[in-house]
Length: 113
Length: 111
Image 1 (tube, each protein chain N blue to C red):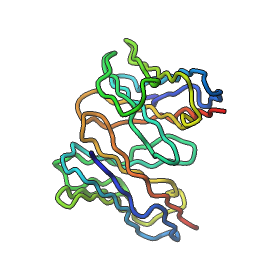
Image 2: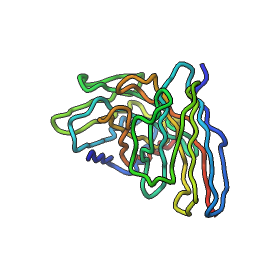
Image 3: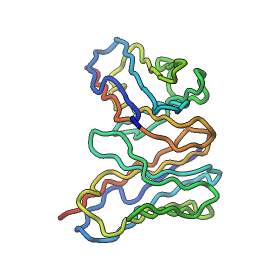
């Protein structure tokens, strides 16, 4: 059974640009969550999608947004990139019930120049 | 707001030692906790999950315990091997599927 797949693995952007990251969950998983990992702040929750609806949201500015498609695949978008957005962005999927185990992908490394 | 602390931040041990990684939390109203390992440049690999109603879980050389009354969880690794070298993270689920992570313990097992 394939794991969580994130594309691309690496991205380099400049300040002010926007970026879209993609996540394909484990087959049968309906919940997709996104996390940001930085050396200074560690792992922080961005948002969770279930059945194409945002179910939970972390404390990030509106420049960070996401969506989920009918096949449970999810995308995360960051607009007007800032240097501080440089991070490893991780996606996790779960079956979708309450408090289910989370399974993570290998992440997208985003670097802002 | 849940706060999670992992001690120590880094640990270096010789191969074969048994070791304990600690994780403390401030809000005991949790649903479950997961222990993960993260290899450099990689995502998180789930090691163990303990539901709120459980006290411990075991998988191979790993044993994780949960004590909600004291706000602590421990990950015990028996007979450590160089392949165990990684960063270990604990994460608590106390709001649906939103995980709150500790800062991690960076483990180095020397041959």
